[in-house]
Image 1 (cartoon, rainbow, N blue to C red):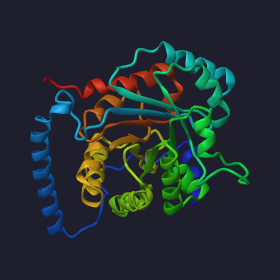
Image 2: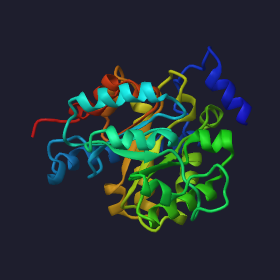
Image 3: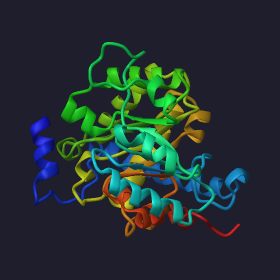
Length: 315
């Protein structure tokens, strides 16, 4: 499994973004019924959202603030990060966006000491409990001590390369939240799972592992990242992303609470860049982005942050 994903990341020729929905296989009659139900439900939501006073001038299904995270992964040097931080500090960013960057662990202190307070810092991973004799791990307490406010958990590279399983990731999220860190909770299907019509099944199973463990959803941001779109240059179409985001919000409503479904921000990740962010941001259930490669370019990351303006509509 790990070798398959590694080959997908490193190979020059990447799979095309699927043109099919690939969400869940059902019988034709049920498909028709579900399709009708979704159309009716979407129409109801679009009408009601126009009367939602807290965000009356922004086309968002949820009530949370637009959120953009930059996952720098295992990239950068002291010099390149100094340049990136300088670019971010000089960028003009829309005020109504929560912005977070996630540097490699060894550069967090450098970034924290030089980056504008306008942007918060996240870890890329954390241990499942209190620190101790766990070689190579980073504890939540250490992340907090160095100034982090967030941590990314459940990223596909941790799941499919490192081998972390749903239940373990849920426990890590629960511990981070109990210690006061916000959690960017990643979910998403592989290409073969989408082709098999298992997109919803996979995402819901991963969501359930979080739901079964976390003490509260107040500081959780859900990041939908289809694995076939991460680092491949292939991005889900706005419609493909939106239909999964709608399903995730509906799952939260049915399995957690209506309040959590409304408040929880559901962001999209997977080859997001300055050229496609505006169209993606227009979708009602896309509450922001988790950005990979494009977050290493200050001006382009600023463009993605400012794509919140695509959501703004006439009052």
